[in-house]
Length: 115
Image (cartoon, rainbow, N blue to C red; front, side, top):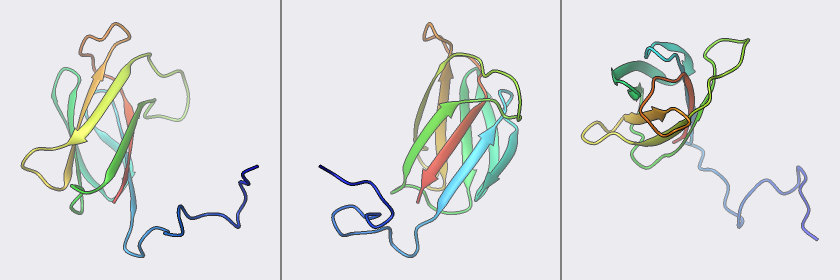
């Protein structure tokens, strides 16, 4: 049986490099960077399309996003999200958000980047 406790915090004997950083951005539906760590700017490019720029190169990073409120109370709208590196901008992530039916829609989101 596998154990999950504090004594086993690495994967395959290899932990995160000492230079690794966890970056994040919380962005409102209209593209405003509400808060973050290592996040420099956020912009709404078009309906459901955003760019989040960080203070370092994120081309080799892992990224995960989720639709979520930019504030501290209420219910997030339903929807979907996709994240990808930003072509031609090594310190940016491209985010697209959709409504539940899959149509492009502005949604607030949380983005985490492990760089």
